[in-house]
Image (cartoon, rainbow over all chains, first blue to last red; front, side):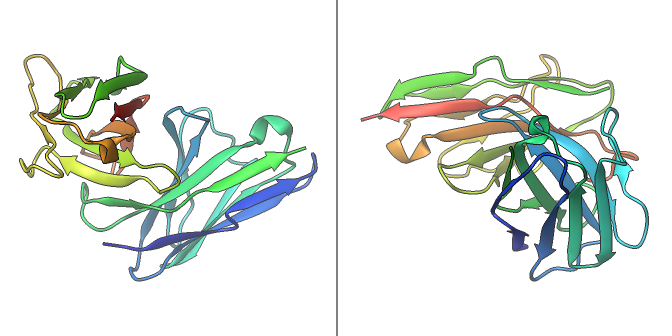
Length: 116
Length: 111
């Protein structure tokens, strides 16, 4: 299956700063990637669908100006949390769809963001 | 809109005992259901999907459209089965690849 990496694995930042998280598909060209947010021992909440070469599609209630997504190539999508606040502290996970409309999703290891 | 419910947040069993993790869904169309597992300090990974009708690591799950359920079962639990389990639904159509996850169930298998 697809191998997905995320960088950094954890980051601590000050309130008001911006943080960029990278999601890379190491062995698969992904036209579509997904970004999730996970609170401790809770479910994954889909934030947005990242589409290569076009604008991301955000889920209802997710601020697109706060969570900027760029999918500039078939192997890289980035999520930038702008003007981060403590309530943005969470675990952010990306996934790659291996092909087809319902084929297997492969998940990255996640990025732990802590905003002080 | 679709919804996935896992009523048990925590489930504890002893090694060798049968285990069933419940999953119910609501969706007006014909869904595709999945079970994902997250072992300690590992990433989320696919365990099984209903269209495959296969048994993975001794786990099986049958889609019951009448009861809108997709419960995960294993006749004899092992300690290495301890993990967080998520039921997920794909609605199809224009929701290309998008999954709706349940709240997750933490399974602990005691020796």
